Picture (cartoon, rainbow, N blue to C red):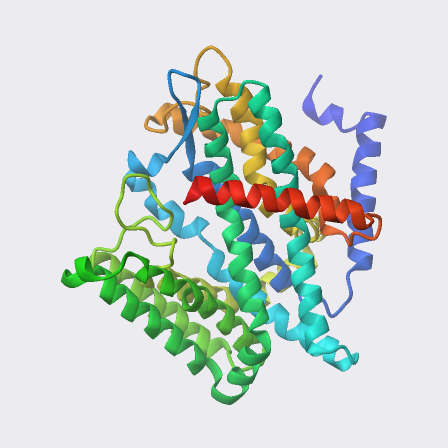
Length: 421
């Protein structure tokens, strides 16, 4: 039977009709004043996280069947530019700052105090993290009893916990929103310059010839200003202090600084950590990360009107963007669990599974990993259907259950610290 004929069958037509009806409902429920471009940018930045981790992170199976972290970038350095596109945390913080300004402004107009607004934001972000930690606190002893090697469990903990550092940093910069807004109103985009300068000074101290005399923790000073940089730009954008002219300067200046750091100062080309290398750009963020964030944020602001028009014209695309935004924390917190859902059982087989538990150092691995991506996405969808409840207010979970979830999360956090540190 020809493929077009399948669409004429009653069942197929009914599925299409239901899909069209769902898209129409999303369209009707979207307020006219909704800034679709900002939602589109958030969805794009969010989806780059799982795609980047699934593509640029690998797992190898040792002779004993245990899994260990690996990276295709160690063998394929030419893939580093892919990390420039997939590392979009700068845009995420930009959108976060912009959205926080609008949200706090609306709350103030309704008579809600700044403290209440902040507690609401922190609670909404904290629930999904508490959920994933509690679930993994239960999973670890179960997997151990099932015969999963201890080394595999350590690898799993690292994969699950590493993305969650982002939530802690995001909570920190969100708590600074009222002060960021006051600074933006007074000094405009100049408020981002000291943050950029701080990161530059720290990089100079830790990468200069005298770096051997500097303490090992020095780079951690970049965590605050490094990620607050793009958030402050978003606050300035939300306060109307950053327009298209400033965006052009950010795009051109960020791109120029990026090129200079890469070519003249020999910063690592990869925006993600590569096992076996001494320097990394992202943990903690280096000046190269801020240069990339500046260029990306400038481009995002310049493309805002075009993206808004596109999402108003393409209803199906807008429905997909809305779905991603409604499940943002679920996608972020559980995407590595989706990979492990396939990789851990695969590691228990008699031989390594190509593209899943084999060393990421061949062209075959790259092709087979691309083939695995849809299956990992399906696994994430299934996990999301079960765990999305953690994003909703826990009105149906009473005190004892909340206390149990908090206790399990604390147990997992303690174990995670012993593994990572």
